[in-house]
Length: 422
Image 1 (cartoon, rainbow, N blue to C red):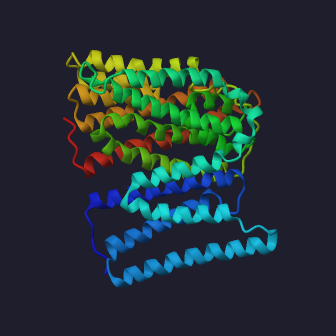
Image 2: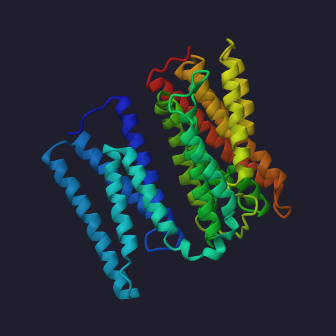
Image 3: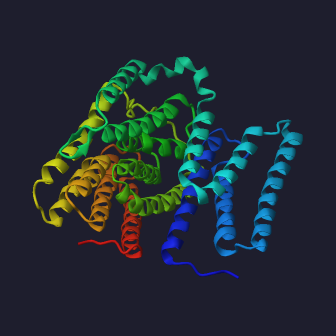
């Protein structure tokens, strides 16, 4: 007999399923790139089914009958994979070990999402790194474009700063080392995405837009517009940009605990929508606008935009400003950089005694501005052969859908968890 659960617990379980979607997608995206037997959709399906089965057994049917149903479903999924491998062996002479193992991993990670989401995400990312790089290091000549000199220089500077800066060093009450660690993580994500883009010959628009959003959303937007790509590709860039913003919020775990809900739900819906639109489209991109994020030039630009958010949050902490002023400031910063606005919100929440509800609203405003700026980046670089009116109309629809979901989920989070705004 199914039992009723509180709305807060339902929201948490729903988040686990969304995280399961991302884990399945991360594991399957590389399989889609190489046109393997099972692609991203298959991995997503197996991962989410596994998570749902564990939830069914642990929450709704914690009985022997629920356990039997779970075992039967998992057994059926494994038998399905074995039949697929046998079919592939007889038809193509290749059993497809990698794809079968990746699907099994999607099942394991999906089940793990219920018990430990962070471990599930870590395993998924590590698996993606292994699959994506196993063949790339054989192409040493093609990797010359990744500006190894600038990369090594920047890594050396970062390592030196990390060693020299004491753990307890604070400036205006803000831990310096924690911010540097956040910067390093963001740059690592950006660089890995850049590495995959530069070292692959894949021209699948979904793959390029997904990784480009992690590497450099503005540069990717410009490049896609110049190539005459569909406006829905910009929609995908927006989703991965939003996911990257979660890293900045690690500075303030309390805020992150609430902000992760609206961001992930918005990205979840956007990824599904853009996948359906883009899955068959291809384009030829040179990726000239997307520069190495670890080169000195790119890293200084990156640090400069984030420094604006850092300085403003410190300066404004000495003044008592109305909330409207904070909203205006964060919107302006969001037009410049989504990461800078997110850092400003995280530090303002930490320093200026801003309530969690107001911080969430500020974050949504800043991210909405960062989403809106994609209109300006794309339209000014749009290919002359494209119908500008139709392109802009479609892009505005995608952007309004994304912002509407983000705002709605922010308010829903505030209401469900009874978060204070005053």
